[in-house]
Image: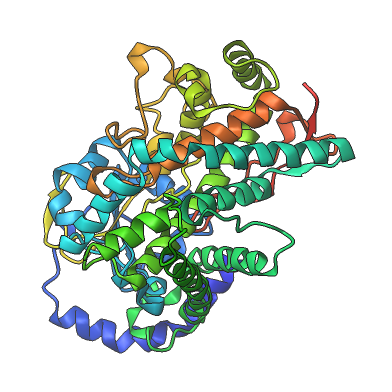
Length: 503
């Protein structure tokens, strides 16, 4: 219904753009259509918007089966090229990365000038390289993550205790909600050394609501992204609401930063070695790209990217294991053999748990949280797959289609973790194997990937090793609802509720 409402809204506003579109068409030196990738013929004004439906990654996959692994569409005023094969993904993310590394910016990221500070959206530049270096060297380096592992252990232990309490009360657990709260606390412990998902705290509740609100609004189709002439009007109010959410969240971060700066002046202060201390140290060393405003927006990115993506993947992984009892049994048997039944998974155990790692790889193959990755923009005309991607075009990589490509994967729609076992199947998610790139690839691969993988393995492994899980209300694996809800992250349309029991 939301998509239909959006399209009616789109049609209602299309006439506003007609004169400008005609003027642009007369002035532009367009690439001849025969040189563009193939695709469906666009309608006047709205182009191919009606082709997308409410699950664009599905619609684009169907179009790629009809027109080939590289297609072009006209989405309102925006020329868009979509690739759906590992080879072409490598061309986009690696071979021609110099031309295609920058972003096509959605209107929402301009709220509070966030696009000027946000690492995912900044153009590749000295500032971007400096922020990326800070991530790789100071925040997500192995030695830094190892130093903070006790905080993650405490939060996973708390998750186990919360689930145990639900088990004793005979209540089902909302897996996504529990994973979101745990991930939020894992991040807040890593960044601030405090918990931000405490249900008894009004401040924590407001913070959580703001993060959810940002994710929901950022994931909605926005008319302005297809008809930039409407930017000043902001007809759906998305940028206005995002501005409110960001301002409220950044004010909270500013308070945390000011409090830490004041504490650091005291002679008795003992450094916490959390991310905030690291960022303040970098700022005080005279790093011109890391002032208080940059720290606030940097932390905002960590929470936006880290919470929904990790909790959504966790929910999909549990859903697939419950739908595939044999895979669940194999994962539990491995855990029992390596660490013992009923014990919490430690980070030092993960290297000895290849099947658990395979479960997560198979989950992100089938359910990548960002099914189209973040949009890229062609800085000049570039030839890909024998076709021309014109300067200024938006470029999307359909990793959902790549993960289900029958030319790459046997039985691509089946959940089969075994495909990742064995020396001949050493495929990882680190951006080196373009048939599995749920976190992107090339220089713009998600920098928080090492932390996200640790969190997923700890949470999933601990939950299935400490409890036996059953579906709620007589649901059986064959009748599970595995429908998707498209947004900034790919969520389950119906939240997964499962009942924990003693092993």
